[in-house]
Amino acid sequence: MNTYKYKAFQAGKKVAKLIVFLHGYNGCIEDVEPFAEMLSAYLPDALVVVPEADMQSERNPLKKQWYALVDIDPDRKRRNPETSTAEIVEIYNKTGSRISEVSHKMNAFISRLQKELRVKNKDTYIMGFSQGAMLAIYTGLTRKYELGGVFPFAGIVCGKDMLEKELASRPEIYLFHGTGDRSVQYKTLDFTKEWLNEHDIDWEAIEYDGIEHKLIEDEMKDAADIIRRRKS
Image 1 (cartoon, rainbow, N blue to C red):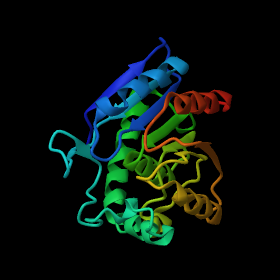
Image 2: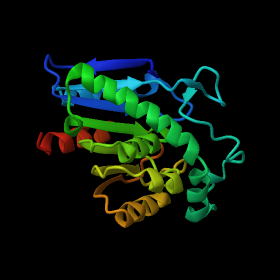
Image 3: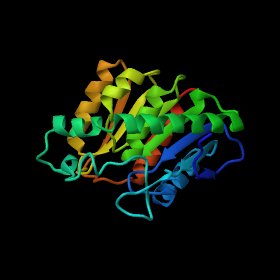
Image 4: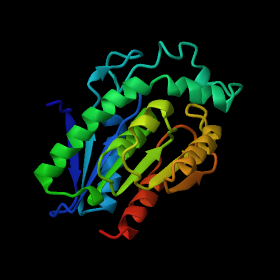
């Protein structure tokens, strides 16, 4: 069975919730470790697990990626502010078979953790930043049983045509995005909202004025608040 190298963060003694936190493209565990620690401190009854992708980054041999992008978008048109939202969506749509394959591995990884911890789907949450956010959305929506929630930070619905074929459950999606994001462009957030509406998936958007393509502590606070107010 596929498994990932990972690091776990736990502030309390009891584990009632499982949070799987996915790093971004050209990233690693260390990139999101400070934010996993914050999240763990805000939710002491949760175990925060940060897995690391098993594919070497095509941009930095010391980093990782969940799936390749350079051949699909060699000129990084997806980051050009002059590129239309429709063009950006289509670039990400071309990754469908890749993100699908990784999501199956990720769901198997989550199931193994749940079995070890005896944590149910309704008490399991998946989060991710950038490419990890896209994988979090895809993984959550293709999982047979509904998770407690999906938290993408600076993401977009990716591989939409493949996702429509594999859609299996409809957990609530909490969309975190900075208005200054030029990497996963903020303007694409409207597409994600529309796609979720079209597929009867409940969502809530939390937007941060002027924030660029990065994680911030306020996002961890807000995500923890959402999880706390959900009924187990």
